[in-house]
Amino acid sequence: MGLCLSKEKDPGRRGGANGYNSHQQQSKPGQTPSSYHGYNQPRPPPPPAEVRQAPPKPSIPAPAPVVPPASAPAIAAAQAADTVLGKPFEDVRSLYTLGKELGRGQFGVTYLCTEIATGNRYACKSISKRKLSSKNDREDIRREVQIMQHLTGQANIVEFKGAYEDRHSVNLVMELCEGGELFDRIIAKGHYSERAAATICRAIVNVVHICHFMGVMHRDLKPENFLLATKDEGAMLKATDFGLSVFIEDETEKGIFDAVLQGYIDFESDPWPSISNSAKDLVRKMLTKDPKRRITSAQVLGRYLCKRFIIFCSRNYIGTFGYIYLTINIIFMSWCDCCSEHPWIKGGEASDKPIDSAVLSRMKQFRAMNKLKKMALKVGL
Image 1 (spheres, rainbow, N blue to C red):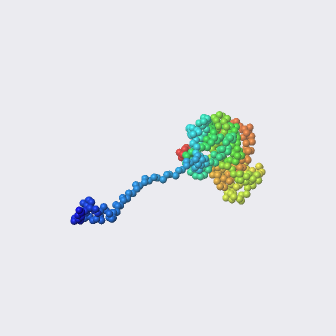
Image 2 (image 1 turned 90 degrees about the vertical axis):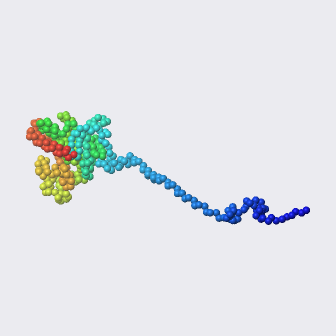
Image 3 (image 1 turned 180 degrees about the vertical axis):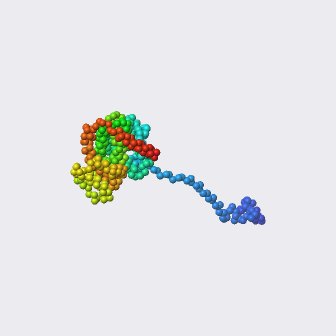
């Protein structure tokens, strides 16, 4: 018995290598064997990745540089650089209460003021900085403060309390002289004796003596600048308003004193060549050593040149005129010492007889002119 082996006639019925599941491996139309399951087929390139731009970062402003706060000394130094008095601003109203107006001048107004801490009353001279337009004006104010500080405490001179400055004004606080101006007292009284006049002259000469002894020239001595401390009959007379005052320079003073002692001035040296012969003649006669030949004070004051010259120099202390005025002034200094010891000044020989009423009449006229001037100044402020 043998098996009959025969070959399959239909090869398509075999499956794979062993003929299993041949129907699962039949080719699909249009498909080659090499493409089965993607074998050996190059893969398509992947789609380009979408490029996404990063969102813009919010702009952060750069931090401001840290500036340390200004220290108190720095602030004070900055203020001092822009002040008249050269020190930090200080409001006078933080220490004093300003009251009614007492007077008015070219640069400012004087007010009654009361110290908050004590209740004491003073006078406050308020100077508008708007009026201090030049460097010289500011220097004048500084010098006035220095001179008042230098002279305070002396008899017959107004006491100085202090100086304060703010953005708008410079304020000088000083003693309040409630008796008013000497001029007003004389006119209101109606009659004056030589003895009363001698008392006033003694106080005025004492002011000149003190100022000169301490190296100061007032340069604006007039009845309006002398005040009475109180309203009492025997009130002390006080000099005020040192706005035109100056210090006497040591070198100039010494040179002039040497000339006075020698009784000779070299008129060939500066500033004398530019000075008139009349002015030099006046100084020469004042320096004569022989008292019998020396010109008297009455003769000096009676000369027209001297009157006009002293008035001019007291307002314009500059250049050669100032030098001559200082020369004359120092000569008068020695006379002041003699005047203070004169019997008439001391009061022993002064008469009680009333002075002629014509003198008071002329003083009233002069006073009226001063009031007109003050009204003009008031309009200008």
